[in-house]
Length: 309
Image 1: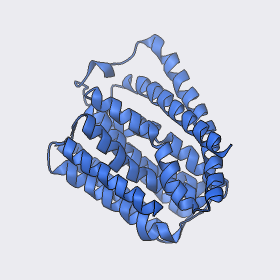
Image 2: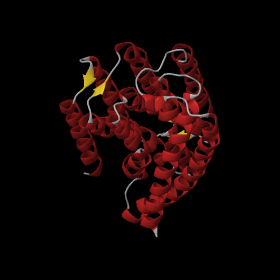
Image 3: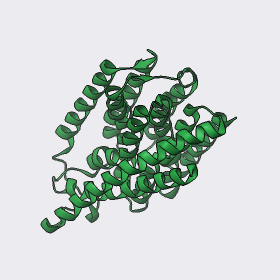
Image 4: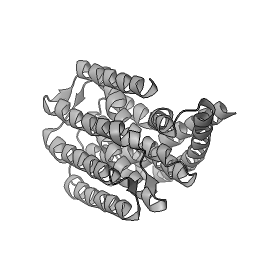
């Protein structure tokens, strides 16, 4: 029954994330915004919806280690696993100007979240600070990106007027599926931790984090194959910023989160390190090539091995 709940939860999260992203992108392109902004906001945030609902559900269920582990583990998986695989499928081009802005914001938001975690608990004040940072980030993005023309692909052209209703239906249906999937996944993960007698931190950092990152995985690989590197790269950066600011902030406002000591000692420093590594890899060339993607994947394998040994 436990495994059935986890599988059902992952299936609902994946299906809901796909529907939400499809609907969100269709609605967003009518606003005339650039593909990078779509990747950083609606695609990045939409694919992070499973993490949001899962972390809130875990916090309400009295499992803060799963809630925080989901955030930290998802950020690590987004960079090492998802961007690594996407780069292997198709080298990911990076824009130097966007990297300076969004890379700086990624590192800054990661450091802010980490500093608040080292206080030992994320409470209402910390949640307010994180959400205020998110609001500032969105305002900056909208101001800088909304007037940029989209010359990258005909696939991102505005949908016809009669496509708005299906797009809205996809978005709402996706949210409903994600909410159901989060409930199933958290319940199954808590039961699994008890059955296997392992910490909820490990479950949150591995099974839950990887499971809730499946929409990012599918979206980034599809974007890479369709030669939409802005969407693929922006999806990872946008998702990670959203994870620490929106998910961390919202969950902390719902209920205070006690940070497990082992996460402070190992996994949060790893999250900071891989965020810095992403900026370094992207900065050293005009794109993230296949060999660099392979190194990212190897780093993910090492991290998972260390968690389970």
